[in-house]
Length: 288
Image (cartoon, rainbow, N blue to C red):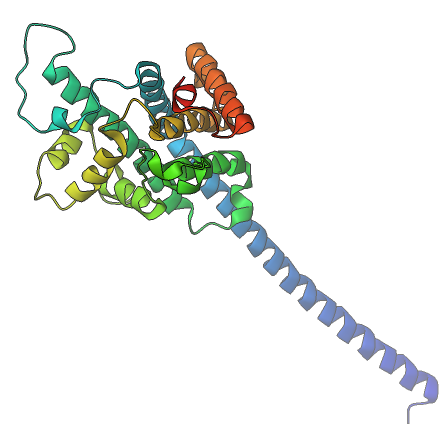
């Protein structure tokens, strides 16, 4: 028979073996779980980084092209080419003035295209990021804040804080409409999806029966027939220009031309003065 000391030794041996086995199993289990989760987190970070690299240049280029056109519109307001009449007839080229009917129609349509193309690149970027956890897109938060501000510039009627806001001319592109315009401009199967070119956009714009033509009409409403007085879209264009440059700053500030930096600073100062004074000043002061 085993004496008490042998029994005690045997018991401790069994306990030690059990503890060792359990510790080994738990260690392996934790190792597998931790490694798997770490690997998944690394894959998500890599995917997010790949998406940011993929869309960085197209979004920057589209933002700069739109900002450049907005700067021109603000400087010339009310410009002679943002009129529905410029779109209503078949235009023949002439050998006369560079601001002939063909030029005005081109400038009007290309303005709408630049808005649509920007919204399309933003929508493509959003669709690829939508399934990633927000913690893996934190590095892009300043850019996302700028995009949110741009969506607000298009969509929010509350921006006009004037007491006589109802007497102002204005137009909106609501948030879901912005996404729909972006979707309408996307072509090709995954993963080779891209934004349609200007030629394809003109086909949509000039084909009333095209299923996406309604979104071109939405763009027309936002752009054309601007008034010389109490035109709130001019305020929206100023805000858009500032926030587009903010977006590029968040992505790749080296790409911003000096002149656009200066224009953005001027518009930011103008908007700050307007906000400080409220909208009590005359319409002429707002336009200036």
